[in-house]
Structures are given as structure tokens and as C-alpha cells.
Image 1 (cartoon, rainbow, N blue to C red):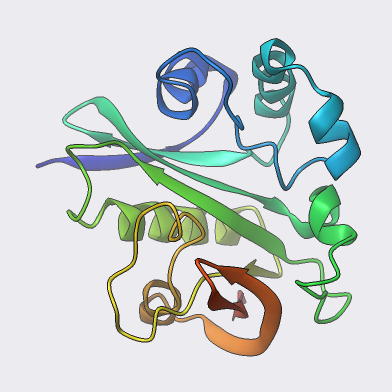
Image 2: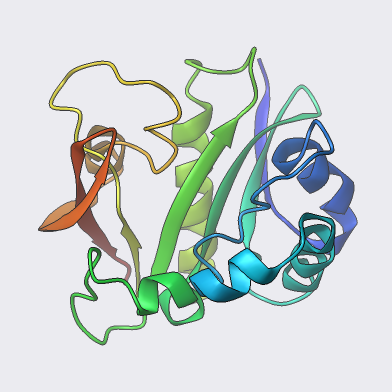
Length: 191
């Protein structure tokens, strides 16, 4: 299995759509954290692809794509924390400090490619990309399943074990949960 990762750019818009909206119906389009709750709720489902297309056209890319044997298999959404409007107003996921970190907010791996390490490859790609663009660090808000297996819908934010294996450290337990399990603010400082 050959896995490659690439930043999401306008040239990869079709692959982004295949991953974020495979059925063509209502979808998040990885905009949930990027918009205030009011703006997100007002954005019609049919407008979300165009909003994501605008994000694809700026740097840094809004996500990382994983390809298995040339086919899109996974997505990791990220971006500068100050551009994540919902995080800026969050009462449950606090800003730790004013350091200009990037936030890793979600993972999506297509059926048939799960449990093959794609999420870790995506995260490694984000770390390399952020380092290359001079990001001060990365922050994530994963769930802590305490060693138990959890459903993929609860793990879309990643797990603490995934981030710890990539060198992230736990900073503070947030007041946010996923499947009633705690989520942590985790940080990886980049030189």
C-alpha cells in the first residue's frame, strides 16, 4: 500500500469533494470549527462547497489529503487557531495562551481504508507542512478513550494516544467531550 499526503489546494478540489461529501447531500465540508455557530447554521448546504473552495485558494491549506495507490483515502482539517471562529468563542476548549498555533480539528478516513494507519500518516503530513511554513506549533483537541475502543464518529477529533505518539503533550483537560469522554488540549511546539 503506497500512501502519499498532499496539502489541499484548488487543483485537488475534486478529491476534497470526494472525501468531504461523497454522497452529495448535506455535509460539514470541514467548516464547523472555521465559522461561528451562527454563520455555520446560516450557510446553506449548497453554499458550503464554494466556501471551502475559497479556503483552498489561500495559504495555509485548510487540510491534508491522504492518497492510497493514487486514490483519495483520508482528510485532516487544520488551520491557524485565530482563523477557527468557533474555537475563538469556545467556552469548553480554552485558548491556552496567545501563541500563534495551528489547530488540528478533524480526521476523516474513507471506509475500506480505516485501521491502516492513514490517520497517523495524515498527522505526520500536517506536522511537516506546518513546520515547513514556519508555524509556531500545533494544537489538537482529541478524545481520551482511556484505552477503550470507541466509535469512529466520536474519534473524528483523533485520540490522545495518536497525538502522544506524534510527540504532542497534554496541556489541559478541556470541558468538551466526545461520546461523553474527555477531550484534551494537546500541543506540539515546532522549532
